[in-house]
Amino acid sequence: MGQSSDQIREEIDARRGDAADKIDRLQDQVQATADDLRHQARNTMEDAREQVSDTVEDTIETVKENLDFRDQVEQRPLVSLGVALIGGFVLGGMLGGSDSRSHHGPGPGGQDHRSGGGLGHTIEHAFKSSGLEETFSNAAAAMMGSLTDQVTRTIDRNMPGFSQKMEQAKHTSGSVMEKTRQM
Image (cartoon, rainbow, N blue to C red; front, side, top):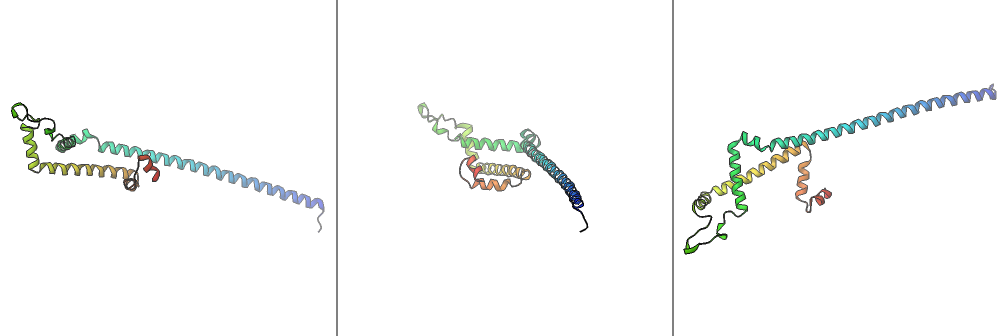
């Protein structure tokens, strides 16, 4: 116990100064680490935003390319003609174009002046009796299904999980907003 009270005070003051220096250095390190983490988080968020933006742009571009009708017609003119023909028949069937009797009946003198008579009626009858109507109907359904599958795969490739959400939406009732809230 050979130390005087002045020496003990000087030693306490020195240790207090060392502790203050260590606390300052520790505070600087913590501040630097926090700044680094903030910077990394900001960079990660910007990278994620860019990736999402790029993915959305790629998806839109892919869909545009796949649905570029002029390009499809130029590359596949006969298929395009077939699609147009099938579409015309499907649209005509949906609009009731084949039932012309409801609009016109026999004219004066008992003659049949229906718009479906003549060449149009003959072609329609041949189309139905030859089985082409069913073939075209099946082809139209297959094309629509194929197009739907292609669009779904393209979107799912660029937005993983889309197919699962699509299936959920199929089995959910309500408006678009109601379905969105339930997912």
